[in-house]
Image (cartoon, rainbow, N blue to C red; front, side, top):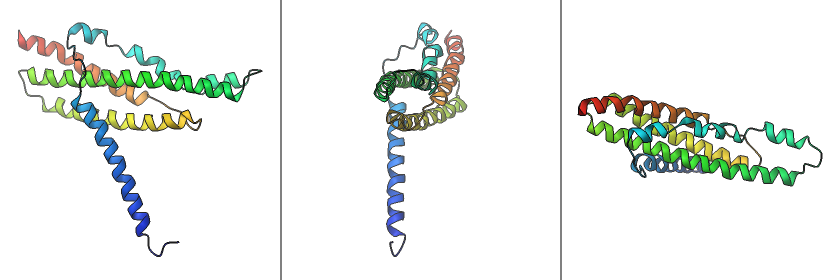
Length: 181
């Protein structure tokens, strides 16, 4: 044992600083990059929550449990299936993150072009970006554990935040179009 708790406190502070650094990186990526920004009514209409519904069920344990009960199903097959689903899920996460960044960038652009000041919407946008970054970090952590067979993963919070932001964008689009006329 240590004579004092100083080394443990230092380690704890280091871990907390690392967590904040990762969070800052995620928030920075979300706030600074918008990717391609096709801010058109058609793009917004094409942007559908339905494309992310399969990811909500992709890593649920029921399928694997069912397959484990089947004759001839081996642990190696389970690992292979878990890895395949892991890679598919990561693809969904990349797409969801990119769409979220685009929505955020579109909202910022529309706020700048709007004739009226909307500090309430700017605050919502910032909070949702932070919430998305935190949720994304948790999902990535749980995804690593899932890959090792030690956890389940749910992207429901990410999809919910995405849905709210998409709604804000759709609500703002007619208002900007009307004020420009």
